[in-house]
Amino acid sequence: MTPQPWMPGDGAATDKRHAPATLRNRDAIAAVLADWLPGAGTVLEVASGSGEHIVHFAAAFPRLIWQPSDPDPDALASIAAWSAGAAQPNLLPPLPLDAAADWSAAAASAILCINMVHISPWAATLGLFGGAARVLAPGAPLILYGPYLEADVPTAASNLAFDASLRARDAAWGLRDVDAVKAAGFAAGFAFAERRAMPANNLMLLFRRTAPT
Image: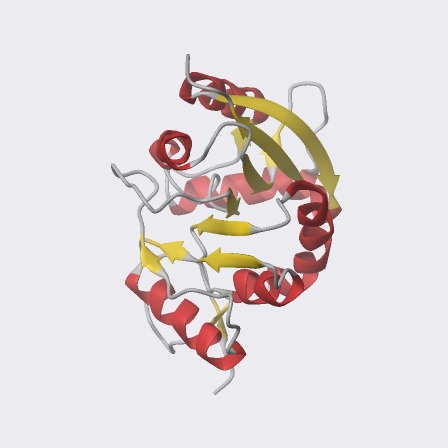
């Protein structure tokens, strides 16, 4: 059965979900990950969604162990279905993990979060930084991908329309200001390290865990 296009909260139709943007952005994201990820260790993906990204990255970075996670049971089923089809030995079973909750996971060498910050309440972003601070060692990366607002950069019309559609769907969703995300990271013990402009008016943001004081 052909996987169906899907967003979080859409409800179950088949186990395998399909996020159409994945095929368009996965290689561009992987190119940046090659610069930012460690050479070995475990990468925890928070909010893995359909699971298509992490299956692709597990194949692209075979020396890394990939740990998918998501709070949505339908997403967990999709991740498991895509993982079973890929049969990657470095891809672990998905974990039920809600970024907004008081979560903990086994120590990770890096954390990756794609397209969650704008499709979730702000509490999820705060929880992501708080949880990552407990999981990551000093210097380890927390990597975000998605559309953002920037004070000194004009927002593309397509992103403004997307923001409006998100807020119409759920008032707690919407594009976040990069400065607000940086401030949340700093408060949780992360230093902002790098910004990369990506295709289709997206950004990748790199944070690194600072040493506890």
